[in-house]
Image 1 (tube, rainbow, N blue to C red):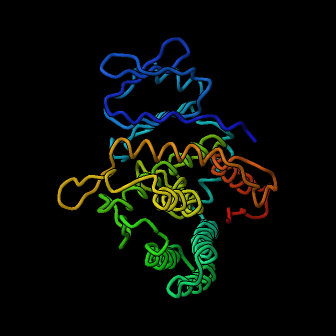
Image 2 (cartoon, helix red, strand yellow; image 1 turned 45 degrees about the vertical axis):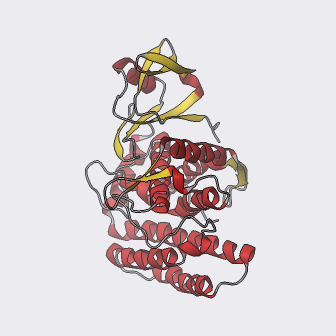
Length: 337
């Protein structure tokens, strides 16, 4: 297992990135505020429109450091990557499987079943910690059925219907798990998020999608050719497939922690227009700090049976997916909490 290096997050919208030798330099209003050797990082995520110098882009490309550009609100803009890594035969097999309805359906069923299982695990943990809740209990039972039904689907459209029903059921009791008095969740919404909880969820999911795309590139897979999410120019469909199994474990649980431990408050959000809520710069920094801290925690991987950093989970699953596509594994071992 590779070493978990750092991802450098630039949250100041006015920041400009450049290089000085083998160092990444961050400047604000033409004044240097931070620098770090490029060999100490594996990725850069910047929130803003100032951009980066061509020299910095080449430095990142030469050192296999991903460079991702997001808007100040966390919306994906673009991504710079070096030459495609990995075996061309692996990518050829990936494209063949993507065109094979039966194999794509099988992998999609695993992604969805894993997602539902992990949704259910988060709800069961709430019941264990806080006692019985009739509404949550009912959704847990329904999700048992949803998980089984995901393997009974005959095409991906039908599977998406099962996945959608499971997500609706899960989010119908999402508010039960929020203990902070100043936060209320009614329904999942995005583009734009209409309340603080949805704003945090969308932001964390963006971070997670970026991690999954980087992991897939690292093992030699094409993050833009998926099995469940349809192909669309500019959309990292396979990264969206892979992140399904991590949404509850890495995304939702982080948001619950931030709210329930009072690490964020209603003052960290502001209205933009009549139906949009955005986070303050300090709120984004708090989420990123918690995200980076969470990534350093260690767990025993349920399939590999070895201790790894939580931040390496997307890489571990991308590696296992590549092994399955190469024929080294009989099936893809989806990550289950």
